[in-house]
Length: 112
Length: 502
Image (cartoon, rainbow over all chains, first blue to last red; front, side):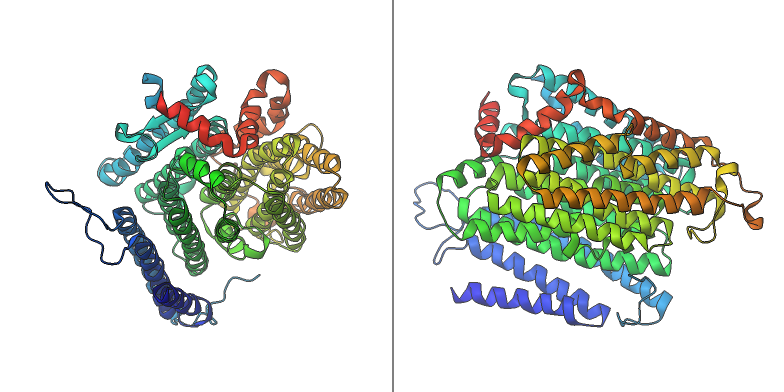
């Protein structure tokens, strides 16, 4: 249970970074932390204590195995996270070229 | 069996087009335009053909099993009335927008990259519509979202980048909520197939997991579809994109990513209770009023249209949230109509921008004499969105209002009427300041836009005029099948699993 709680804490740290930080780079880092937290959560769902890899071999009986599906899904999710991070960072670089600052409160050409 | 192989084509064609345009677009002149034209035309034709096949299919459902794996284990693709309805809507708009982009995108550099991203976006939307697997839905949702973040920033000017950054951050937070919702559902039901999940959930009782997941999905998809508490990104992102992409974003992206996923998950998987429906109706009504009130004070043509998107999505959600057959029919019909007239309006704003170089309504004026076709299509679209009788917008809004009265929700009916009147007011402003009045000196020499831009605008205007005909009995199967899927609720599970077992 404490693992899930720590995972939730990690997610909240990321969310805090996205919502409260003024620096664009810190917001992106917050986004990354959020993604790690949710991937960790998904892996934890499939984890069993003292479990083992679900590889079926001859004359072996597996009693307690880890659910492999979340791990496969998390791999996909990591790739998606990579794509988003790469895109957002390249946008941040362009923003710095145009505005000369990373401060979100000074990047305010759009109104309403 | 062979009929079923049409289903994966909706993902394969745009994906192949995206790959080919990025591969050969730079080296062979005009190749990317040709590829995009052919692929979007083929997609539109196939979506109509799929509708034709669905009529003859048993139980009006077709299931394609990827790799031949049976549903609870493998990913399956499901084509039913609702997916077919959405497919036709998306591919219709995508085709006209692609034709429009052929000339419009001349102002920007690097057309092949634009068409690559455009195809990826279409691929994501088509995949999201036909998939029958919850995690696969998330993957396609992310494909469409990431392509749209990049497309919003396509101009790479200061405003575009700022809007795109805002959109990307809020979109990623929304995706995070959706992902966690899916994780909870998986841990609870131990399956990811939508039909199987619906079956498991209806047999399993738990008083907190389902409402919790419902709230997560409502936040996630609410952000994607820009319902009012979550709408902050839309008025920035939609005007910043190139006009053809604004038409796609407002016309189909927010509906596919937001409204369709909400419908699919809430009605077919979780099973809509009165509580969810009440929340949906409430959010819809707020969006309806808040969007149009904010739109009234806008002077930027595209920003005004973006606020109207929020308002019109409110109508769709209100209609669907009513939960009665008539309300859902009205909501879906309004979804289709809004796709048509809102993309037409954005294409018109693009035409004004293309001809004059400005979108500020205070600077334009009297364009009606110099751009007669644009002025007329804009008049048609404005009348449609405001709900003036012979046009399609009238019928769908009327159905939603009648459904509200039928269910006894007089307050929401009054909200819908007020929203409609305010919409009319703000579009009279557009018509007056953009197309009527005296022409300014500096715009004396502007010309009507080229034919490839006029053709989609005229076609969409014709659909606006004759869209109401979809309600007459011989064409109603298009809407009725979609409504039937929603009303079936969680028995969607048994229908899909039976069709897959064949």
